[in-house]
Image (cartoon, rainbow, N blue to C red):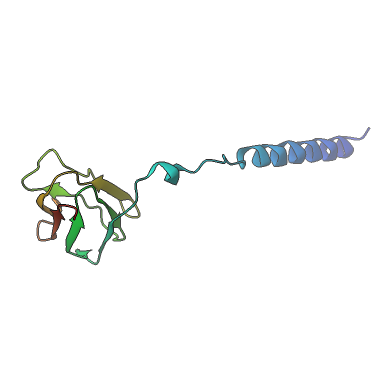
Length: 125
C-alpha cells in the first residue's frame, strides 16, 4: 500500500470518528431547565442605562425576572433588604426573584448608582 493511500484511509477514518463525536455531543436531554422556573409575573429589561420598567406592582408570591440587555455589567442591590442581592449580571444574563412578603423594595445598580427601580408587592386579593 502506498503512503498516500494510507494517509487517505487514515484521514477518512478520522473524519468518521469526528463526525460520530459531534453527533454524540449534540444529543440533548428531553427535560428543559425552564421546567423548574416559577411563572414570571413581570420582566424588567436593563438597557441603555435604565430599568424598563423602572417601577413594578406585583402580588405577593410574584416572581420578577431582570434581563441584562445592556453592554455593561449590572447588579441589583436592594436598599432595605441587604441580603437580597442579584450578584453581577454580565450582558445577556438574567436574575429572578420571588417576592414572598408584602412591601416596597427599592433597588439600584451598585455600579451605576443613578440606575434605580422599585418593586411594590401587594397582598393577593
